[in-house]
Image (tube, rainbow, N blue to C red):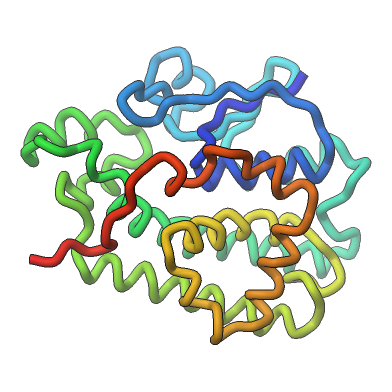
Length: 253
């Protein structure tokens, strides 16, 4: 039995749910409260995932961490539906995409996400209280929270993240000239890894960062949403706008 510890709105959780859905693998879903409950920072969960982040997959009692690693693990462990190219060069291209997507847009999307949706969680906290109660308790994201602070990221941080995301769409537009997917004819884990990031930016109201400028990306996103697995992974309640009031990415002063 596969068990997935995750959060509905977490982009990293969404990519693993999408991978599971594409491979039609049944699993038990354990939803963690990342807000007031801080389930991901409780001792029992930290035993499974010392990083204190979601998701964590448990397969036959063995925990697997890091969303992209989980996706590759699932594709190797359950190969009936392959999401990795057989050709070594194409497989390397896929992994290069995955590395880039993890290092650049996955990190960048957190900045507008937190500024627009999560700051109300910290209302009323001064900086010292915020550092003590929210930032310094996190094994992996301590310095991310410290940089954000209780009032959110600065304008230059938001602008830098949006630049990184626009650069990602530009790369995708070029790659999609060779076929419907990032690896041409082959639908792969690279498409799965980037899909939640596009979905998140659309949910935050930033679809204009690719629409009208990158028609291939627009068409790719429509193809992704049309796949049966997409609706399974992005079930009701998995988008921020469904349960949180969204604010401006940068507060005017």
